[in-house]
Amino acid sequence: MAHPPSNPTSLVERKRRLVQQRIVDAADELFAEKGFENVSVTDIAARADVGRTTFFRYFGDKTEVVFAREREVLDAVAELLARGPGPARDATEAVERLRPVVLDVCARVTSDPHEHERHGRLLALHPELQARDALKAQQMADLLADALVREGTDEASAVLAAQVALACYRTGRRRAATAGALVEETRAAFEAALRLGRA
Image (cartoon, rainbow, N blue to C red; front, top):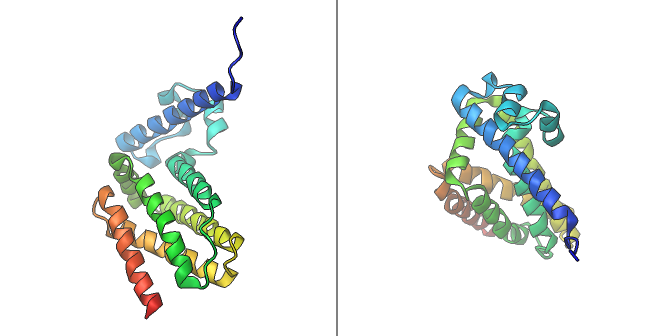
């Protein structure tokens, strides 16, 4: 007698992720070939071999596809923060607590250097994507601040520390000539910020 799978949703979830990845891959290819502004949702759906309805089950518009990876990163940040960075006595200590989380984010977003660099080129060409990128980065900072407050850090220190952490991340992104340099450039930005906090 056959036994039912122990986790019946796992197959469904795997299939869902595969379809989502096909859509993302198709969009990435088309954006590289034609440019973001010259690609429609219909084009992406056709390349991914899915219907428009299926596309909209996963993404609200083509801009959301560009940031599919960031959604995964935000989920990973939330998971890391659920382990608790621990309470901080002041903003400087809070920045120290956030440093390993942000460096982990840097490592995750550059795990595929080619994809990371292609994403950066796409953002550089489109101001509307830069605005969405800034919103996603602020969402990460809000997650960081909320986690610190939950752990007992006062709100003013938590918010300041999260904004400093975000500034370090943005500095790392701006200074990193390659995907591989992002972690080190961000680490250097944290060290500089922490020196200021101790001055």
